[in-house]
Image (cartoon, rainbow, N blue to C red; front, side, top):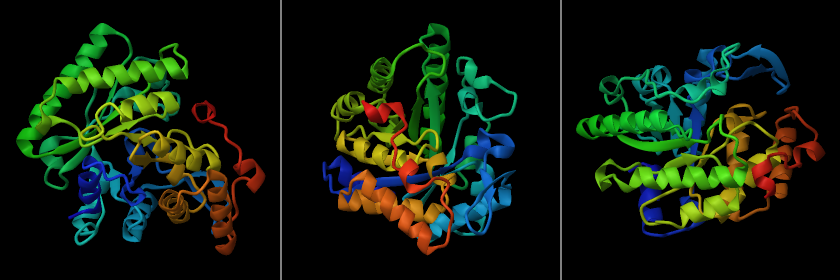
Length: 329
């Protein structure tokens, strides 16, 4: 049994041991970011350059992270998954491979000169379930609500069609619900709006078609607490990482989210853009397992970088600042 399945079983039985916390490395940015999706090249001493990394390097990082066994899920594009699964990376591994099964237009914000994220999200899928199921049995499906009746109904109709097809093929899924980039709501209001949209979406689903867990933005303590406490035996809440931020932002996000009920962290840029990805995730694990303060985590991480002779992007004072608004509520 994969570590994900073991932990999900424990969480659903309300076993809230810290060792059950699930970490996913979200390396599916090539489906959203074009040439900059894999991140940027770092020199041997960790110094960041402005030259975009390439696809082969991106895949190698997935291979390395999976072999570290620090994560429970490796989320990939179909292109990456086909390579790594054919290389038998996940055989006898505790890590579960997963792929992004759709790519709503709001995820295209990294595309140069595109500005797609300034428009209400449209449902769209590149990956085909018939091919995906040959490699994985778990995928990410993404939706965004925009307070637009026609667009939101279309989004939900597409999601229903996906669930119908996925169930027939034996594809499990977890559900990502983005904050709308076009709504003029403050964080508290956005949290309330998204939570209500999620619950009304799930209420009409039969148990077999429901997502294993959620992937949502952290909209502050109140929003996380009310959603995570609504139905904890069946509704498992996970958080997405968002922008890179500071190292303190990363660790504070995990600590706050866990405190208010999240049991999964699905981080993309916070891992992929870090100075040393293995050290970052290892410190995330240490923080959760030992209930450490986020400031202590920053110190641990910087100590790891020093031992590896890796240059940090910020000095420890700057890296110890909390910069993300939702973490200051």
